[in-house]
Length: 105
Image 1 (tube, rainbow, N blue to C red):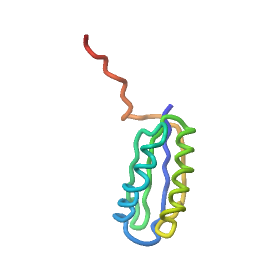
Image 2 (cartoon, rainbow, N blue to C red):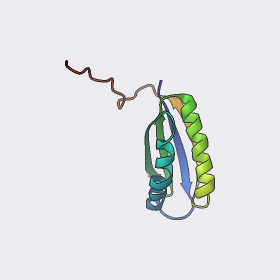
Image 3 (cartoon, rainbow, N blue to C red):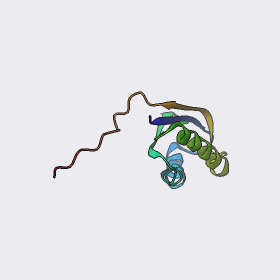
């Protein structure tokens, strides 16, 4: 069963657009290189807060991603934003997951 990680961050300095730039150059490559990666997104939810949402093939891979994200934030962005809450859970509904379409022969 696929699993998702949702992390809520508070922006301490700078803007959401700057956070997006950092995510594109840092988190996107980090996650894309990780085993089990399915998808990643970032959304602003308050003036000074945003969520990071990633989907993984397994819970273990989502947990590993949470640890990698924490390391990356600590090394690259802890002065700009901090983790408020982190959630990892199994997806009950995943409309992006599609079964392969059989090919005609």
